[in-house]
Length: 432
Ligand code: NDP
Ligand code: HSE
Image (cartoon, rainbow, N blue to C red; front, side, top):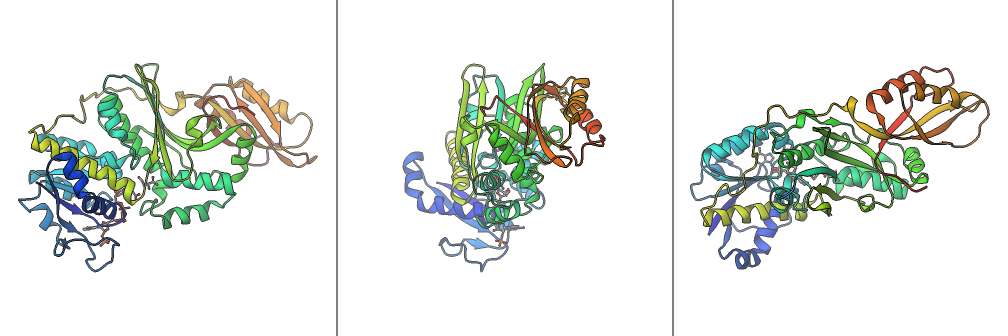
């Protein structure tokens, strides 16, 4: 028997507990031994959680979990940096294996936690920290171990995907869609993390660390969220054959690694573009496998609980087989990993200029684009209002980000451009 203690009994804690209790026999059958839920620490012991737990296992004393000599594995499911980090480090110091869903903590303080665990000879399980129920951590660490990872493209924030899907399919206002995502339990305690791309960047940092064997590179990720995306741009993108998705991208190019999170226009006919609602998907290109795609629920109590329990089961098996550390986390400490600056990234772009509907305006704009080596792929003027501002939508061929920013700065100073230009990066070729 392996004993488990849990800290936190909210959305993920509830799913984890439900699975441990309701699927106890299935787990026992598969593992050949029992996983016993021994203690759950919470703040409010009286709150009804919708799952019936054995008498006497709830406590408000976290130390009752951390100091219990019979507990083998501690699951930290409270979120945030502190006191979550202190709890994890204490558990590790006490010789306990730890499991967490806390991507914010791993992205920002993960190196310290992984190092402490390595030193103490215990494991850190973090399958639930990226893409909820999709076992993407196991895929990268084990399933694709034979591959050099050429690229990862992920829709890894359920809240943002839910909001963008609602805006695309039902023309729902941003704030209404966010409120629904919060009610459904997808959003972080601070939803800014979701809508400003920070949660995706946390998850991308964890994936990139595994893909490239580097210390968690959170600080190097260029991050832009979806809070400035309008239904107008979603609709124009759709007319051009694209969907707008918040994409987390890691790829190797020119012996450097690109790490970025931003709203991206993807051709509607790509499989990943069809991923809607709170669902997540991660596309991974290995040098041996070629393209692979993983899809499923990226948030919510049961899918995330499934990932937590899969870590518990994995660690329990390793304990039983005396195989702790079977799959190391950070395999090398590359200090001089070269991360490409966002300025040097090459991409195609969508621009929406707010330009006066008058002869000669397009030539002024295209002149500036040409000056910065930005080649136009297509132009559409949306509507006709002589002498007034109309949206002028331009798709470009590949251009350098730095050139794009400079060109926009110059274009926005033209007296025929009435508002700030909107731009989005575009991946792949759409069909209009
Ligand atoms: P919730 O806010 O729903 O739950 C947090 C729980 O932690 C609550 O039960 C709370 O207790 C408890 N808690 C908070 N602080 C303490 C403390 N100091 N001591 C003891 N208990 C404490 O969070 P979630 O379940 O949504 O998220 C948990 C983690 O999982 C986060 O790191 C999140 O990023 C991650 N995650 C969440 C997903 C989701 O779909 N929600 C998906 C993937 C990862 P009380 O109820 O008594 O206040
Ligand atoms: N807030 C996160 C999301 C939860 O919306 O994806 C899952 O990590």
